[in-house]
Length: 639
Image (cartoon, rainbow, N blue to C red):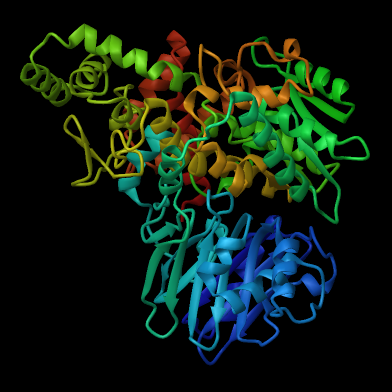
């Protein structure tokens, strides 16, 4: 696990700039750092290293291919690199390797197969830059689902890229303004969806894409080498025909294989264990393939309704893992809160970022790599919202279906036009009367709070329209209704295209890397993802039971009665913590300074009203946390 950076058409400050970029992402790679410079053609690559496989200098980056045609700087892990190495050796195209790192193997694969074909063979998480010194082209690419980040854009006439937005901000003369128009999306979702970033002109490369840059002209194009939508559609057209038991057998086989590959490391390795279905399954399959107790980690809260540590402890005892748990409260939460702007580098407001950072900090004290159970909900229909979406839409249609369509449409339009920041009823009417499908309702998630559209002062002149407001188009709002058969399948796909890469994976990657902890997610293995899309919906969700195939596998290792309990999620008692004490003072300070410095961007009067409503009436919404995270980030990054 590492951090990468680069500048194309660099100037006389190239080395100083790349060293500053490397410094800004030191936490992503504390073990070593270096750069590669092609002064003649104005190309410089930077790299920070967290040594995981081949700890020697033979694994150092940036790295040249044996022919010296290609130079790579790379962040991530290719889990099947040994199989790829064997394939090339059998084909007689692999020279003697200097070391045992995956970097050297994939570098030779790019040279012999070409970029797109080589990527088709690779299974893993990665963001990388490849410089073809012969063709004078640079290739930027990310893994299929988006575990590893990669930002790019133009700064002072140079093309730049980096794993960390703070690296780009560290460049001399960086002056990109806050992208005001994206704030509407941020307040809707609590994160900034790709391809946007918080800065104008700086973008996120989307998962499964290759950006090809001409070094001479700085012109580039972007194409897909893997597409989640195509994979989902192909899978659903070629459904698994065996029984549910057979489907579970195949899932177990694939997951065991993925986990075995992801347990390869030359440093201590463990796993997060929350006590839920996903993490319990991953740990069960790890322990079944380990000769010694797997190191597992969890955190708990002394607040009823938020603590799963006791369940995690029971499962750890049953499986025989070496378990570590830590109970935390407001004091520990306040400590990580101070680091949020540095850890996340752009506004991010999923409040489960707090326990994720806390468990990452705990885990890093014992191991360097940790496996995680993320992605089970999105791949195997685990969210309750998926199961109830169809019935909720039916209720909506039964309630308003008798009203003529023209009247419904007119009523919804008028309600949206008349609604203001305190018009929840009108906004609900606008939603009810203009909603056409479960997919469109899912895309509007976050807009049911009337204040959402008024928190930012600026909005785009065009884009997705709701009422009298415009919001930038994103993956959700552009999603084609009925792309797949079945409402649940469409909602899962929508989340895998936007929510999962831009929220869940951002949360896990940034939290882990802030503490120099590599996180690995076996459920996002290419073969597991592609297989999951071939399963009939009934093997995922039926009779009110979620993640059926996963449960079937898990119950082979953990008694069913140990897992039969309501889903809690990885959340914190945010409203309770904000009521009083140090966190309340922190919020007061943030809002006070925000009023003074951020009125150009935000509706400070509305924000003050929301804070009064919380203090006086106990009204807490996620939007208040969105505000606090945005203002904290803006204050920390103001010029």
